[in-house]
Every structure is written in structure tokens, then in C-alpha cells.
Image (cartoon, rainbow, N blue to C red; front, side):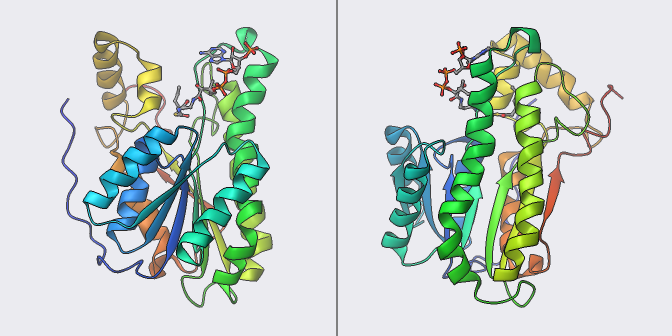
Length: 279
Ligand code: HXC
């Protein structure tokens, strides 16, 4: 099935004007499209990730679209990298309003074959990495929040999650545990940091076409076509999501329209998780 064209954005192009966003894992895939959409709606953007060449290429591509972007290389598992990333963002643009935690690691493995280190690695990237970035960004986000949530867009954390842990998913014990903890953190910070005008929300994508996650599910073109067909027919809306769908959910959460939304994870999956069996 061919990729579906993204329609024009329903949001005004200046809806995020004057705001600064930092996106971990922003150099490729869903993270890059989130960066792109935040930038196309007026935000200045900073991306971080482990691979400097990927980040540099992304910043150049964003610049060609008129988006002011900057990168800081780092690994979210290391707290000192997170502090350096936040400092780099504030040094470049003078403030930080929006943090998107998109960095993630995953692979398929039956639980009985998963090593302790494999389990720990995914929890360290997804869960500890998300906490590290939130904690490192707290001071500038608090400064940007400047008042009780609900009175304006304030500051915002978006944690990119998944739906695989709502029930249980084959060979995903590690990622399911990691993202369940991320969702819990979204609620905890929504509670505690709402006092500082910082909203915390999650976005839980379903199957998204053309992503690393889908490639890992089905390496090889024949397998990929079969899995794509199977996934499409198992989604009530009849098709996989686009990276654009996830990025637009982030634009909505960052916009004043979502000023009273916090502590909640928004599922963007065409009702896929509600319908585990093919229709
Ligand atoms: C079993 C595996 C494995 C595999 C790694 N490990 N890959 N075990 N099956 N396919 C084990 C290793 O053997 C090692 O344990 C431990 O995990 C750490 O592996 P490293 O390669 O040393 O870790 P690192 O270099 O830090 O790489 C992290 C990674 C890697 C998660 C393993 O895949 C990565 O960096 N991915 C980032 C991008 C990514 O995964 N994106 C997809 C997100 S999509 P031992 O015991 O041997 O030392 C998504 C949606 C769901 O999350 C998609 C469903 C698949």
C-alpha cells in the first residue's frame, strides 16, 4: 500500500511562534517529523540523539525548509549528557518551553531469550532517559511555565509512548515494561509539575508506516509487505498511521487549544489496540 499524502496542517503557521522545543531522538523517524511540524508552526527547535552525522543532516534539511534548528549530540541514559543538551538549547535560543521525549530503543525478543542487559538497556533508554531529560529540563521549563497550568500554553513535556502494554504483546516484555513506566511518569509529573505551569502529556502511536519499529517487526521486503497488509486490515480505520499524524498530535498538545490537558496520554492509533484480532 502506498504512503498516504499528508494534508495541509489545520493549525495556523505561527501557533508556536516564540517557543523553543527540544526533541530527543529528533534526528530521524517520528522524532524528526515532530521536530519538523513544531518548526513549521513557528517554534525554534533543538534535536538530540546519539549519532552526530544524523543530527547534522537533519538540521541541514530543516534549515532548507526555513526552520531554525540546532543539535546537541548526547545519550539520554547519561544524566550529564541530558544537562549538557538542555544547557545547549537554552544557550542557543535563550529559553525552553517544550520537551519531547522521543528517544527509544526496541527489538523483538521472547522473554526467555532476553538477557538481563537487554531488558535493562531498553528500560534505561526509554524510562530512565525520559526521567533524566525531564529532570534536567525542569528549571528552564519552570521558568517558561511561569504560573498555574490552564491560564495559557505554559511549558510542556510530551512523552512518546506506545500501546503495546495496554494488554500484552508478544516478544515485547522489555519495551512494554519501559513504556508502562513512562506513562506512569507522565501522570506523576502532570500532578507534581502542574503546580509550576508545566503540563505533561503522552502520545501513544499505533503502527506508523515507514518507521524503524515497523522495519524491526518485518525485516525484508516480502515480509514487510505481508506485515503491512496484516496490520492495515487489523486497524478499524483501515490503514496505518503516518508520522504526520503523531506530529500533529504534538502540535495540538503544544497549542493553546490543549492548555488544560495534562497528565494524559493521547492514543493515536486508529483504534488498533482495541482490536487485537483481524477484522
Ligand atoms: C535480543 C538484543 C537484541 C535483539 C540487542 N540486544 N538487540 N537481544 N534480541 N534483537 C541485547 C544485546 O545482546 C545486549 O545484551 C543488550 O541488548 C544491549 O545491546 P547493545 O547493542 O549493546 O545496546 P545499544 O548499542 O545501546 O543499542 C540499543 C538497542 C538498539 C535498543 C539494542 O536497537 C538501538 O539503539 N535502537 C535505537 C533505535 C530503535 O530501536 N528504534 C525503534 C523504536 S520503535 P547482552 O546481554 O548481549 O549484553 C518502537 C516501536 C515498537 O519502539 C516496535 C516493535 C519492534
